[in-house]
Image 1 (cartoon, rainbow, N blue to C red):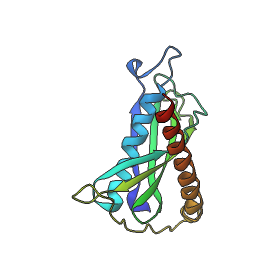
Image 2 (tube, helix red, strand yellow):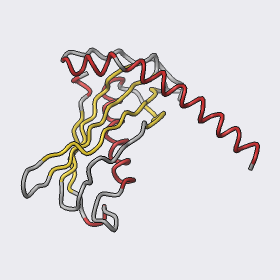
Image 3 (tube, rainbow, N blue to C red):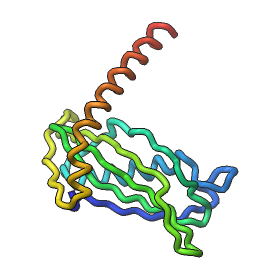
Length: 162
C-alpha cells in the first residue's frame, strides 16, 4: 500500500475561493480526483477511470492563505477496481496549526488497451492502520455496489418520467 502513496500540497489563493474566502468545494473535488487517480495508476500502471467518489464531508474550512495537503493511498482492491483513500489537511501557514479537514474514498477501475476493465494487483497492508483500512474495504465495496444499483434505478425512473 505504501508504494501507492501520493502527497499533493497547494496554496489556497483568492481565485480558488468562494465569497466566504474558503476553498471552493469543486476545486477540492478536482484535487481529490487528481491525487487519487495518481495513487491508482501507481498500483496498476494502466489507464484508470473514476467509478465513484464517496461522500466528501467538509468538516473544517480551508481558508484563503492556508496550505491544503492531500494524501492518497490505495487501501483495497477488487478484481478490476481499486479503493483509494484521500485525507485532506489544512494548515495555517502563519501558525503551523494543521487540522484534518475532510476524508474521501474513491473507486477507480483499471482499463486495458481496448478500454475494458482489466485485473489489478492486490495491495499489501503493512502497518496497523493499513491493515484496518484494508480489512474494511470489502464491506465498503458492497455498500458502493448497493448505492450504484439505487443510482441506476433512479436514472431509469427519470429517463422514463422526464
